[in-house]
Length: 122
Image (cartoon, rainbow, N blue to C red; front, top):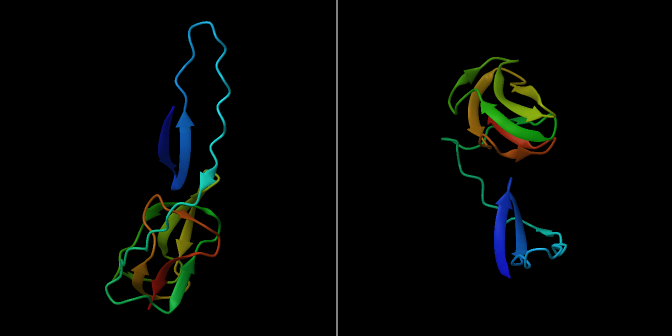
């Protein structure tokens, strides 16, 4: 028997793998791996001047697909700051008002929940 720790999409699983039985023997049913909480890493500081006062929040749970703007970029109301993918749809997360991007709080590939702050504006 061998024990492995496997990370899939940010979820950490401890699994045990048994060596195969001799030829002709029925394989034993492997127990299902129970997920354990992945250690939360502190979000990397991606802003140059701290978080802004205007939040851009995820409209739905999904995954960060693309980041359209960088910290320091000027945006107009309605400009896409980043795009999340949810249920095979790309959903732009737009600036609620004119401003300057103060922080991008996620990275491409990160999972996000509805209402999670993705970026901030000043």
